[in-house]
Image 1: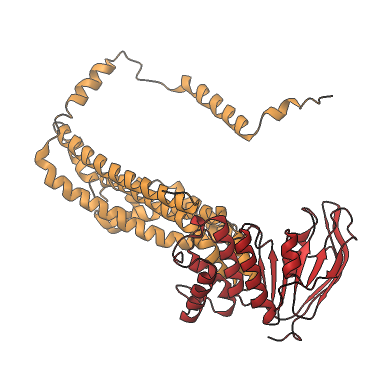
Image 2 (image 1 turned 60 degrees about the vertical axis):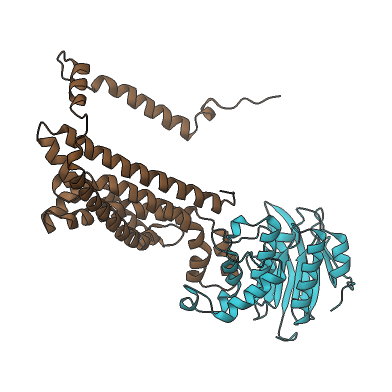
Length: 227
Length: 266
C-alpha cells in the first residue's frame, strides 16, 4: 500500500435532502496520508458526507473519485450482527479477502488469530464467544472498530467512532486508528464532536456549517499526536 | 386555533378490522343451531365424563410404546420439514429472492398450507400404507407449509443493517447473508422449530386415526369400544404430560434466545 496509489477526490459535491442543501460545492482531495476530522453541529451533514465518500450514498451534484484500494466505514449505529459472537463479528471485516466456501463454516486460522489479537488490543479478550447483543454500548463500538480494521482499509471513514467511549478509551482508540491507518499510508476521515480530540489528532479539519451549505471550510491542524 | 381531525381519522386498520370481526361473530350467533330438542346437557356430560375415571393403568406399557412411536414421527418429520423449509423460505423471503422466485414459492406454500394434516395423512396412507412412515410423510409436508412461511418472515424481519455493513466491507451477497442476516434470524428460526416439534407431536397423536402410526391408533380403538373410556383417558393423560413438558421446555429455550438476542439478562 503506497500513498501514491491511494486517491479520494471529491469535486464540487453537494447533497440535497428534503429540499434542503446540507452542503454544496464541496471539494476534498486527499493525496498524502492524513487524519481529517469532520466537524460541525448536529444536522450539518457529517454522516451523509461520510456515506457519500464511502459510496453508500450518491451526492446530488459533483463527482467523487475513489482509488482501487479498500474503503471501510465505521457506522454511527455500529451495524453489528447481534446474533453472532464477538469473534465472528470482527471476522466479518476480512470477508472481502476470502471466498464464500472458505468462510462458510469457519475462517482461516491466520484471520482468526489476527481478529483475536485485535479484540485483545481493544479490551475485548475473553469476550470472543459472547454474542454482540450482550455487550455494552462502548464494547460494541470497539467491536465495530475491530471489524473495520480487519478489512485492512486504505481509507477508513469513521462516523463518531469514540462517541460511546470514555475519554481514556477515546484517546487510545484515536491514537490506534491514526497509527494503524495513517502510518500505513492510508487516510482516516473521522467525524468528531470533541474539540480537544480534534486538536490533538487531526491533521486537517473539514468544518460543515449547518446554516450555510457553502460555508464549509478545510483547514490544516497539525495535530499534536504525530506519527 | 385548534383544527378538528376528520371523523374517519379515528378508524385505523386495527379498529376497522376489529369492528368487522365483531360484526361477523355477533351476526353468526343466530345461525348456530343445536339439536332442537330438550336434552339433559349437564347430565349427559357428567355421565360421559365419569367413564373417564379412574384411568386404566394396566395399559401403561402399551401406551408408552405408542407415545415413543409418536415422538419419533414428530421428531423425524420436524427434522425433514426444517431441512426443506430452509431452502423454500429463501425463495419466499422478499429481501432475499427476486419476484419471479418469490411469488411461485409463496403460491406453493399456500397450497401446502391449505391441505389439513389429516388429509395429508390420508394421502400418505394411500401411497405408502398404514404405518409410521405415512405419518412422517404427512407431517413433513404439513409442517413445510408453516415452517417455510415462518422462516421467510424471520429473514424479512431480521436486522438488515449488519448485512449491508458487511457488503460495504467487500463481502459477497452470499457471505453477507451467511454472516450478517443468518445469525440474526437463527434464534427466531429455532424458536419456530421448537414450536413446530410440539405441534407435530400433537398432530402425530391424531393422524393415527387414519392409520398413519402413533398413539392416534390407540385413541381410535378405545373410542370405538364403548367401555374403554378409562383407557382413552390414560392415553390423553400421557399425551398431556408429554405436551406440557415440550411446551415448558420450548418456552424456556425460546425466552432465553429472545433475551440473548435483545441483550437482556436471563
